[in-house]
Length: 329
Image 1 (cartoon, rainbow, N blue to C red):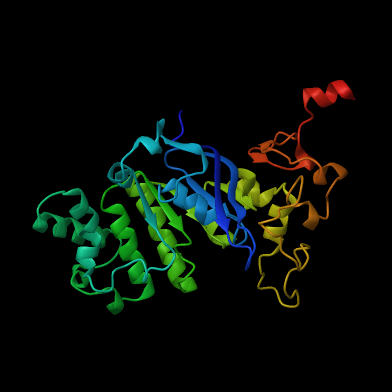
Image 2: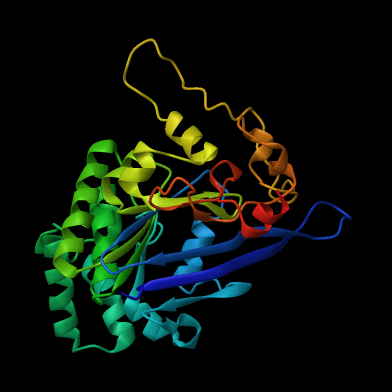
């Protein structure tokens, strides 16, 4: 079965100012990322701030073009699609449900806006579709003529979801959609997203810092570090048998309600890597307690674990021996 989304060797770099009277430097926000996603799956993308998650999301949405590499959807390069054609198939749900909604517009007009842009139906038909979609996300018709400022954070995020789904897209890219919400509201929005996935046959790309949220909603997880995917696996496999030392550290960082344990120590040290000057070899090796001699010399590629576990890992601890290395040994 062909993948719904196929990303091949995606790279995105930016020129940034290094300081007064200094030349610009190149920041590799996304560096050689390859992913694929089957129809109906939920791909969770996790990693520290600045690892490239949101840049990757913007490339999947067509908002940020890759410096190199390409993205195809059902076998068609998205670079050949017009902005409207791509918007029909891929829609976003952003982190802040207030800043992503026009505060001067009514809720019905916000949800109907994509229909306006694409010229679908009459004004009355667009309003009716918007109200129907609001009902599907749990907002009654009485909110249709309200403004975003009159709604709670959870209600505003439901509006953002309704706007994303009114065009019946195939893929929804959710960039931290619950991080600005209370814990109880987060659970409601996650359950809503799961219900809508079943009802509309949606495929999600779900970006989050919250590992518990990703474990709850994702079918597969990609772990990013300094612009690269260091581990990719089915959700159950990744959470039960994390293989990359960075994945293990992320899971060890999760707070527990047990008393007396305090703040968990991830063993990563206090300093963060400089994305403008990434280390040679494996970019994680300066923070890795399991590093080998080869780690600071050769960058590991994402490949199937030599132990045969599902998924892929970019780590010399789990790499298969190449034919060249077998001949030289």
